[in-house]
Image 1 (cartoon, rainbow, N blue to C red):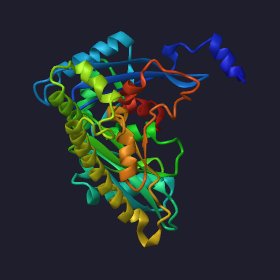
Image 2 (image 1 turned 90 degrees about the vertical axis):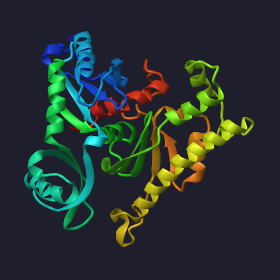
Image 3 (image 1 turned 30 degrees about the vertical axis):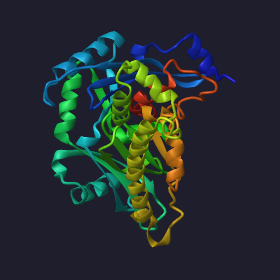
Image 4 (image 1 turned 180 degrees about the vertical axis):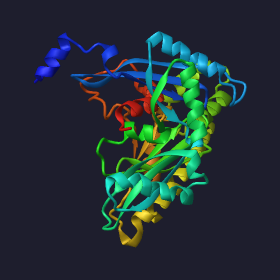
Length: 358
């Protein structure tokens, strides 16, 4: 049933210039800008504008191509205010305990722990935090994200040069977790975000990332295998082969099967390492084994490789599931977005920016 407000808003929408309207921007390590705008509708929070723009740069300090790509998006969509990500490689995430204090004193209590947990000077960083466990009588467990102030200022400068005004910035692992972990979940998950040439593994407790790490594994390894064994096929044809043939379960193409299993096993070993860490982590100390790991949630194009999720499920001692990046936005049974399932993983970070708390 529509509320009176929704009836009025349908016929007399608030002009965009009168509301604080945010877009989301993520700059990937492989020089691609992901852009997303979403709108609240009767179906839920749905995408209304989205695009990915590639750019070139000669070095990490060369920002001209990035500024140009951002400027193109700003002019096309008339974007002013944005929420943006901070790369995993330029941040520190950790978990700490602080005394149970009044809310107004909590930030100061967290600040006292930073120099003990990260190789930084408190005077030279910005940080955010999130309470993840309040069960202990005298302390709260808090997940903390720390970024050097210079990194933040450099990104703000880039966005400002492109005509954009950042209103918040979030470490990319937390942005992905916002998208793929059920809202208000009190469960524990390991979010596995597979990129082209790396994988970000984040341990999430009560919705907050308290540890993340990047490992040397990426989806391009599967592409390299297919290029070696199907050299006469075009990249588009190999991309179709990748998602249409089950090389992991089907051993009829023995060489490809063996190569795919080798890479799947490598990923399994990384995930098992973090699973073991979870079991021995401080959250499970003193025999508190009710802090079990509920699932691995896998994000990335490789989710679409036939047999991969099933292989990991059979090999690991916790449930492994393919991510649904829209799970906190709308019911996929009631709304079909223009972004395809395969493409949706490319927007996980920006989706998480727009649905997560700042």
